[in-house]
Image (tube, rainbow over all chains, first blue to last red; front, side, top):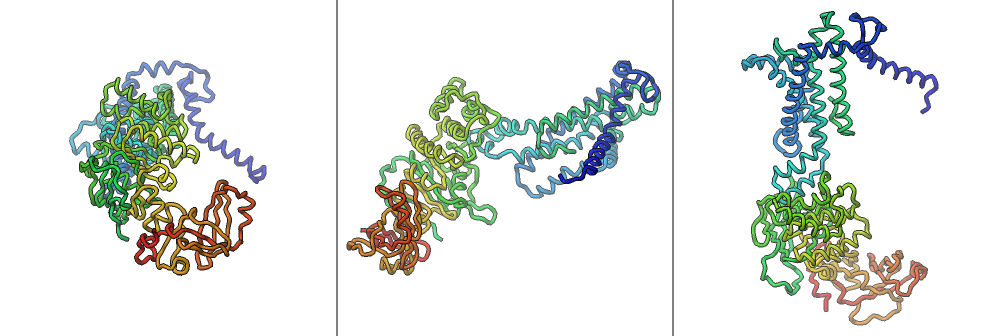
Length: 266
Length: 373
């Protein structure tokens, strides 16, 4: 309010610098997706949609894309079911060690991905599981559960209890109350939690590296593997742009849906 | 404190003989939350078809008692009988009672029609019957044509009516109401009081009504139980509770507390104990006015005059110690005349029969008969 003009200018410049710092690389990436040339040169000599067609026709990209969709959907589905059950248990029932369990449920989000990855890999090996899409799904579900749990638990905390009591009072048993009252009340929290889970799974790389095995690629893994091959570079740019959009849009939607809800942040 | 016996204390001749089992029987009901006694031994019989109020300040145990009848809380000790059948361990959805909640607890994602039909829907009532009973219930609360609205589109009074219809549509034998009018403004509250009473007459079922508002309890109830600190202090008709309060608490909670105790009681009444005189039973006279043999009187000075429109309230500091409040209707007096009385020395006069002895506080025996004719 009382800053001098100098301070005001400084703050404005600083803000633009930060925004530029955050978004300039993304803009450059997006522009290069339309680059006519195979080489990185600024400014690009011309713009084309050619590489989009090339990417869509690439069998490895298509397989990786399908894997990412399957892994994201399956991990999200598992996370929503388990996260909802856990949040109901923690939020709706009092039991010994409840606070500890509530803490233990969110702790994995703070674990380094490398730790989660190597722990899962060791476990899968011990159990003799074949590495592939299934192990990726399990790996992704571990952190997606936390997201789903956080979203649902935040909602349950805000939902008044009396509609559930009213439902029981009107003759509905626990299951009917859950289905007709609690679940609709959690609806948007589930939706935003699901979108965030999916976005998180879709661009996950560390845990995936440890749990994917040799034959299975997701989109981020494909990018990571292809970036070293100069011939693939234009296609990598296109795929990266698509990945960017597919991860940002669900997060944006989730934020819109959840509104002021806390707990949507990862 | 000891629990007064739960059976009606006032000895009112029973106009509703025991040909039916009581709607609700509470036998030594106790509810403990951790170390705290919310309800510490309530015995009560609520008759079939009566409008029964549980009156008390917040934390007196009235709402917890209601929630135990509904089945939302399990009693720590004691039994609950509905129409003679023990339901102490029965979950809410298997009890033949319905509740109107203080915050209405409407289902926000359903329309008004779906809210009202909910109880019928979960009990798999045939579609035609469901529709006609829902319509009937909405008509009863004057909300025809609102079926398609959402609760968020309704006013507070309309939400209240939806909550009522949603409970009544199930035709429970007992309806529980937990301060249902608490969130409404005064005018609407008074309208709803009359309407609720009319609806109860129409459907003829037992209403159990929790409130902290003494006027509401007096206006609506057939009988009132006054709760204090987890116990019932008195059960009786509104007239009983108001005119013959048994304890200091009841006298002060129901109506204005006008207590005479210790020195004032000895000087003015010639008796030891705690006594009460209702403010409207006292008249204000000049100091030299004569006093009849069946009357008491006390000298004092009018400390404050509160003009209330239809009535004026005088707060009189007694020479013998303490204060009495006197209310008088402004039949002739203008506000100017009433306010001019401030500071005047007066003699307060009332009939001996209107003095009531109270239990609790510093009373000794506290038998009301001494003061009654």
